[in-house]
Length: 160
Image (cartoon, rainbow, N blue to C red; front, side, top):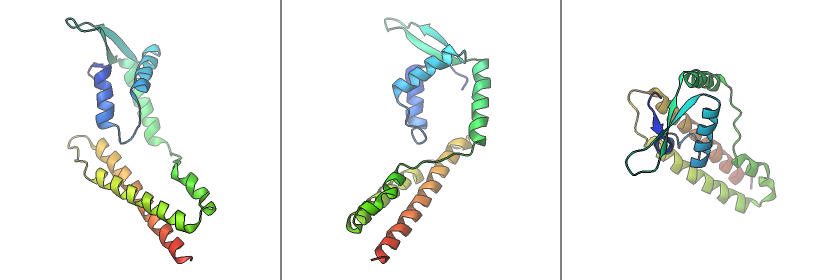
């Protein structure tokens, strides 16, 4: 958090390290950086290296650190309301015949099993536990989704 970075480096960090917890796109990241600068939480310095175009280098300042820690504490202490997009389909599943609904749920189950395998292959991060916690949380939530889908499919298969 302490080093200054170009926007490209920040986006690379987001893609490489945060893609499992956010789907933030580059334009959103740049807009957020500009907003943080306007609010006085980060400083922007224009840097020219050789013949290359001028680039913005972003640095968090003391006000930004204070803001970061406040946001972090707020986030960690909040009770989330999780809305699963797949629940919309579940709400209207009665409109499908079971011979279409069950294969759709089986496909969803298969995709979730693939997703959980990807997370389980994520290497543990030694020094910082935060990444490990986020990955473990994803795995546990996917395990719950898999159990739910298996139970639902089984119930539908036995209700015929």
